[in-house]
Length: 466
Ligand SMILES: Cc1ncc(COP(=O)(O)O)c(C=O)c1O
Image 1 (cartoon, protein in one colour):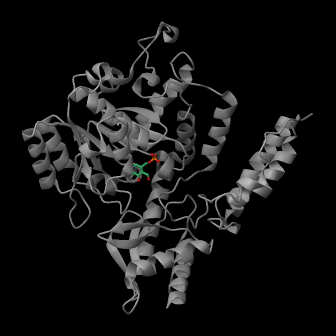
Image 2 (cartoon, protein in one colour):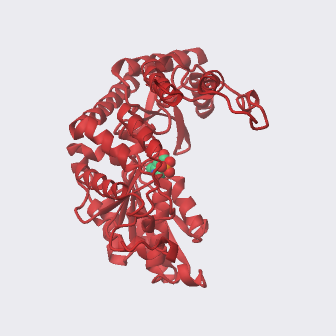
Image 3 (tube, helix red, strand yellow):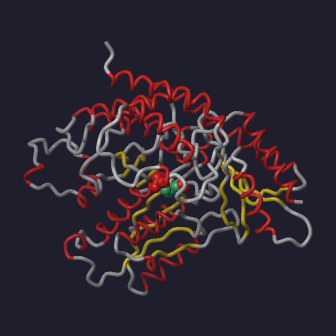
C-alpha cells in the first residue's frame, strides 16, 4: 500500500508536470501590492500539523497567485533562470539524499561527480585544459571568491592574517559590469571607492586604453592593482569586453584577471560564438551560470580557476574536527566560503545526460535564432529602434514616440503597461542616458509563436500610448 509520503510525492510530480504544460495560463507577473501574499497567512506558526493535501491546497490557493512565472515562455525579463524535467528530478533526488558534501568523505560521490561535471562543462565550453572547476551557488559568490583570492595573492597572503593595515588595493571593471563586482569589492574590505570603473566604447565594451591609463596612474600613486573583472556578456546588453587585450594588460602587471560570463558563457557551447571570443585562456578565473541558460534550475554557478591553490591558500581552514585522514582528496569546502555544500553536480549530471551536448547546443542556438527574429521585428518597424546591436538573444530597443514627449518617460510607461498585462514580462536598462526595454528569449520552451505574440503585445501597448 502506498504511504502518504509516496502519494503526496507523486501528486507533486504530477503537479509540476501539469504546471510545465499549462504554465502559459498564468499571468507571467502577478499584479500585486507588497504584503498581499503575507496577509493570507496566520502570523503565528501552527501548533498542530496538517496533512499534505491541505498544504498543497493552500500552496495552490495562496502561494501560486504570488508567483512570477520564470518558466513561462513569455518571460523575457532579466536573464532566465530556466529549468527542465531532468533538473527537477535530480533536485528531488538531492533533497531525498539530503547530502551535505562539505568533504570528500561526507559523500565521495558528491565530490567526484562535481569533478566530473566540471570537466564536462570545461570541454563543452572549450575552456583551457588547465582550468579547475568548482560549483558555487551564484555568480556573485564566485566573483567574491575571485576578488578575495586576488586580494590575498596581491598581498602575499597577509591580509587574511594581519587585516588590511595600510594597503591600498584597486579593482577594475567596466562601467557596464554587474553590481556583484562592487558588492564583492565592498565585502572584501577593498571599498567601493577603490573599484575603478573603466569607460566603455560605442558598443559598451571596456575601453582598454582607459584601463591601461588608470592602472598606470594607480601604480604611480602607490596603489596595488589587484584584479580586473572582464565581462563576457554584460547584463544590460550582453557586450563582450576585449578579453584578450585585458588579459595581456593583466599579465604585464601581474594582476588577477577574472571573467564574468554569468549568462553569455553558456553560449560558448556553440562553435561560432566560441570562435568569436578570444582571450579566455589568459583568465585567472572564470564564472558562468548553468542556472541561467543551461536548463538547470537555480542554483548552479560554475567557477573555474587556473590554479586551485590560489583558492585553497585563501579559504582552507581545517580544524581538528574536520580532519578526515583523506586530506589528499579534494574538499571543495576549501575552495570557497561555505563549509556545507549542496550536491548540485547531480542536477548537471542529469541535465547533460538527458539533453546530451547536442541537445543543449540545439536549444541555445534556437534561442539565438529567436532573438534574431525579434530583432528583425524591431528594426523593420518605423515606430521602434534598436539602441545597441543585438548580442546573442538580448535585444535592447525603445519606442520612438512622436512629438516632444520625453522618450524615457514614454518607454517607462510602455514597459509598465506591457508588464501589467500579465501576458509577457520584460525588464529595462539605461544606455547612454536612454531608458531602454530589454528583451531576452532564453526560457527553455520559448518558440517562434511566443516571439510573434510578444511583438504583437508590445506594438499594441505602444499604439495605446499614442
Ligand atoms: C553579468 C552578470 N554577472 C553576475 C550576475 C549575478 O548572478 P547571480 O544571481 O548568479 O549572482 C548577473 C545576473 O544577472 C549577471 O548578469
